[in-house]
Image 1: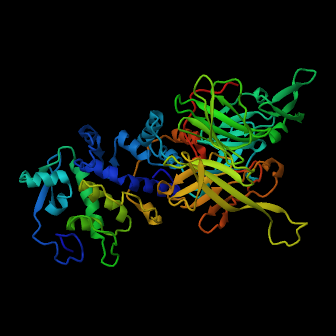
Image 2: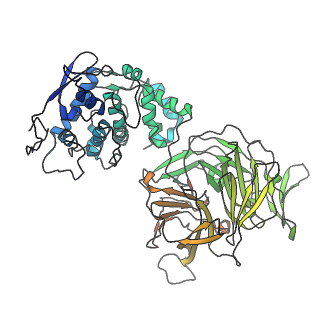
Length: 166
Length: 455
């Protein structure tokens, strides 16, 4: 696994040694990411080019837990990339983006959305959901606590009861 | 996880994935895509617990606005913050997601008040309970913008929204120009008399019908439009004798007759005008907004009566199309004994013409690439399949309709998806489908009417 281009089959084409950039959350936690990956954001790229990135790039409106979640998600899916399941999609951007475009089970299309927006470009494919997700998607980590009382649930469902019948 | 069903889980996950661009944009906080800046104040509201990512109501509402109605309604039931986002979206009035049309039909196994809704988007059936009078006893004579137009056993008209259950009575049938009530000794209406004239031309003596039979001989097709200048709802009827037009606006107590012309087959409302196509392919336009009604002939009819059913529809780009549908009467099944088997109508050809307003010509077009048509007793639609991934390009979705459909109530209905390229017809037959009231396309809506038609 190559830490630079974040794939399992690095061919060394990531080029120069990756510079690491620190993203600093609103509560002063530092997250190290490669400059390539960070530069997917136009704003960050500007700051890097203007020389403001030394010492880290502050993100005053993002908390550490949110930032951690986003980076964890991206890394997790990059890590599950296998060489066999090669994506036939055109690669947008650099090595950092390629990692994110890995054909992970749930999300080649989903992940496409992230770098597109980061690059500040309109993604020509759009950010459509591939509806072919299978039942494995049920197990996604999407825990929402149901804070309704049972009688409230009944009442709300009754308003549109037809939509809830199996 | 609250929603126990597998389908519910899948639906929610799809919601999450579809929303991911918004969630990621929100999280990263510094993304500018086409000048879309998420305000810092929204960022601060986000809290992240150990396993959850809570989004502010405004973001949730934006995500829900992408959903079609059944998914939207289910999303509103997941937890209190989602419910808040759902009610906020609905009350704001800016939920305007285009819905994929559904087939509304009556099933033998469901109750008298139940209508079945087959969703083309989800490929499943919903059962909707409608207000009285029982839907099974009514005729479905039109469907536009989410509203069904029905004729009950007294031949009186209602519009009903099957999704919301809202129902409004239209002006009495006795206010239609050609209809006169006949009273019995107690002063109750016993029968109706239907005069036989159009414009100034009287063809026969009036006919008399029992209360429930007038609807067989009066109504041809009905539409519900929203007038562009005022936003007022207006119901337009094509009715006998001779397929004339009458209309009523929300709040009217009577129907207004639109003489002098007759022989109309279909209507549409666009560019502030009511367009109507005649059975010779002519197109008239009516301006109903001024103090007096203006009538203009857009295109003259052809010399002869056209055998096919004619529809008029507007494309997303604003062009007018005439669609002619040819149905063959064929024996049902493989029975070669023509005397004993049933004869059914099946669509075997569809011709599409673009209306050239300047030259007043019809130009045949061979295909509808990128679009799907919906035709029948409902308001004709031409939909771009790009926005409706479940629909097939260059196909026509059909339900049965013709002038004489009332006569053939128990016949097998011609409900199908017609491939314009191959001319092959693929039948749609939901289980336990009743042939009467005849099934009809409907585009669901959650919109409620502001003003009511007077009773």
